[in-house]
Amino acid sequence: MSHDQSYPFPQVFLVDGGGGPQHSAQSPSLVPCWSFPPAQERARSREKSRGCMGVSPCLALVVLFLFLLVFAALGFEAYQINHMQEELKELRTVQPVTEFNAPQKQIGHKPEFNEKDKDNRPAAHVIGRIEKDYFPKTLRWESQAGRAFVSGAVVYRFEDGALQVNETGLYHIYSRVALIFKDCSSSFVHSVFVRRAGRPSPLTLMEAHRAGSCSPQQGRSWTTDSYLGSALQLQKSDRVFVNVSHPNYLSHDYYANFFGLYKI
Image 1 (cartoon, helix red, strand yellow):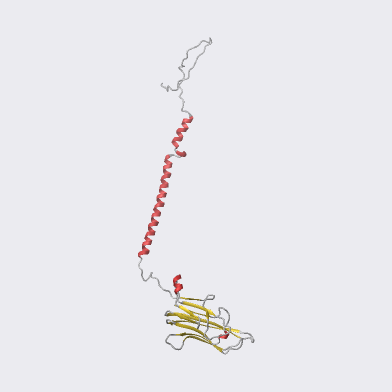
Image 2: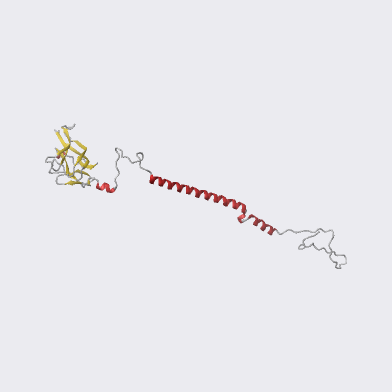
């Protein structure tokens, strides 16, 4: 029987009772014994077979393949989204204007203006001026106090209380007056009129007549008001005025009396 020479059989020595040395001899009945590799080398071989961090190479390849699939799917989705966005941009650019998608003006819809249009739009709103000594029937106004303003092709004339328009067009004109009476009143008249170049007499645009009445409680003052408003055609250089038959009864409330117009 052959055996590995690197691991020899153990030697057996026989000693007799005389104490004399004896030559070593192999017992014919002894069976050869093979030794195994050390435990440390076996552990190293098992660690090498497991791979990095105790994970087998096959499992690592499977996980890596799954990650590649996920990233490929995400990249494809991103490409599809980008492609759809490009198609939407092209449709918006080349979409023809038809009677179905064309913008339409709606009745009662308030048009939007940018800041430049607001500054140049012909419009004015003036509020009543408190008179103490002189009460003209043609009222004077405050054009720079409170919410009063004048813009665009409209000018306020301080000398006669007129709003002068320097642009022909359709204008909405309005006026309100409030009067305070301390006794019975016969009546009063509230009117809006225009003076036009080439016309000697003023042209009445709107007028209101209020009949006389008395306060329900004797000895107490009572208030009445009148409002006029309408859309009217004005010509360039027209001057619009407001008249009241009893200006000395006008309310001194700051916002009780006002007058204005704006181009439609």
